[in-house]
Length: 95
Image (cartoon, rainbow, N blue to C red):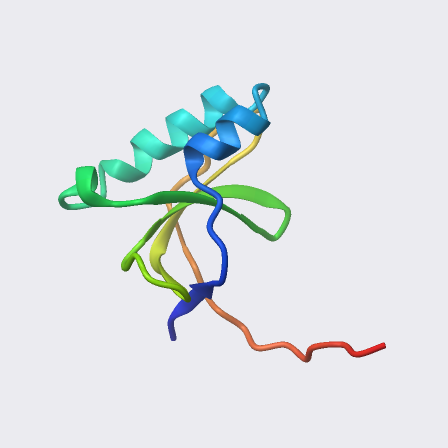
């Protein structure tokens, strides 16, 4: 199953908005690049999964944006091992 985003938040944008986590985001980015072929052509984004910030990369450049399965979670303490991204359906709540 594919994971989609309507809007992207690039690693560079995240680093500008979150200077405290900028270094960790860079480390997670470089870690993930080690698993990506032709990473210089990829757009890397920050997403949140289960409360963790994660670096992911886009597999296309058109909205809705498709994410790769591989993500690199991080927090202010450390970079976590490479994880897989799983999409789960949920109900949209109307008020």
